[in-house]
Image (tube, rainbow, N blue to C red; front, side, top):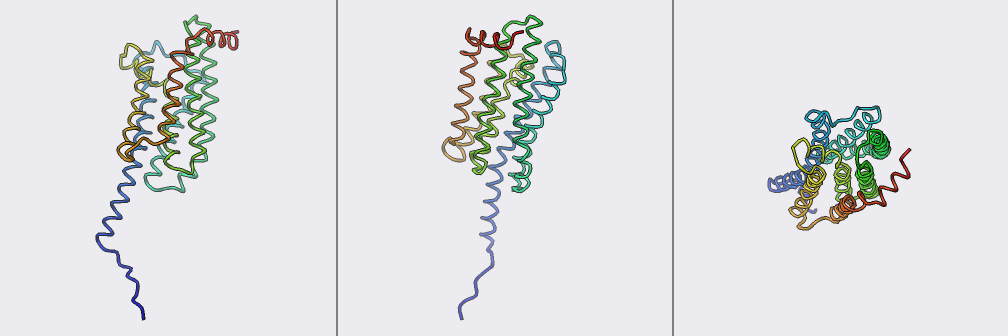
Amino acid sequence: MGKKPNNRITRRQKKTGGQAVAAGQNKERFFFYFALASLIIVVAGFAGRAIVVPERTPVITLTIAVHALIMLGWYSLVCLQARHIQQKKVALHMRLGKLSPLLGAAVLISGTLVTLETYARRISEGVSAPEFAVYLSFSSLLGFVVLYILAYRMRGQGGFHKRYIVLAGVAVMLAATFRLAAVLGAPREINAGIIIQYGLVTALMLYDMRTLKRIHAATIIGTLVCLVMTIGIFTIGSSGVWINLIKGALSP
């Protein structure tokens, strides 16, 4: 008769297996903290400026309130989903993931409505360069949509999916980061807001280098999307062509 299979697990095997699980959780922990940091930045930016510089805070209309709740829901869902992956709750992650396309579409629709409402208000108030503000909003939304679509298409490949998702949040947070810069007293709010955005992007790059010894392809592509958006701020956003286009399309 042959020998019975040895089903005993040695202490060394248990230790090695436990270390592997812990290492996996530590890797996923980064994305939870990244998502949490994004949520904190967004809340601090909008709530902080409303408290510190209330004179620069517009009247909260129904459109703005709904958009704020949708954005809060988006960043909160990303945090929750990152936590579920860290805790290996894949089934729950997949079930809640069905809400993601709905929230993503709501971000785009509500963000567009707020942009149009804000432009009309600034025109009526005689505020200078309202067309530039439209570019800031639309370019952020475009970056979000591009990265979210990439994340959705790559949802079966975790490494790509989670990077595109968190970078989609970075792409759409400029409105929050430049408000946070104002709270902190930065002299050039837009520039400081962009620096905050790319601080998060840099953190993701450093994480890739530490864990993969290279920058992940999704991080590179996501960064390029953000760079195109940023370059447009200093070129297209203040150009005569853009100003005339928005005046022709949106002015009463």
